[in-house]
Image (cartoon, rainbow, N blue to C red; front, top):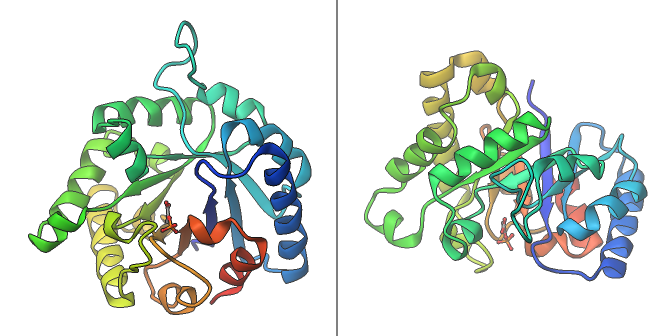
Length: 252
Ligand code: PEP
């Protein structure tokens, strides 16, 4: 059975001391919540990974990078490889976030290379997909999401695909305070599971966690997570305060 997952994406927020403090606070809150049925992940900036990995209890919190390089090593100034991420004690990496797709030109072809690097270094991948507002308004959202899956992930074998967590993040809902309705989220998540069933079969589709992301907060998490195909959330803004994040972790 797939587990509920609540993953924070800190983006480019928090200095190292601030990040350490936040990780300590989240660790305490998650310990007190006693929710072994929820997998909690912190997606921190690269420079925080090693420190935060030492602070949190790995039995209750996993650590994730927010990106990795397309190449294994070498003359790529400023890049961080998947092997480097793994060597910090991190177990996950977020790939394909809409901010990376739109601000840094990450295409499906680039993502295929990053996915391969992450898997070669035993990282679990939180792979983000989602349409922009114009695509939803044109009724193309299902088509867009299907093509992101096909072009970014469907080169993977069934075994490789078992290391993928999907995050459906309608771009128009990210950081805007505009959440997809519970019905819109469930409709898209069920569609994604159908596409996965067609490609990989029912067992893999049923075992794949599909998170919702986009202005998810302590007030709307309960309703969003109550949908049968919504297996938790990828949380941006509301992951920056331990209290808000822990209320989302506690949401059913
Ligand atoms: C995100 O960027 O992954 C995200 C979901 O952001 P927010 O929660 O701030 O909308």
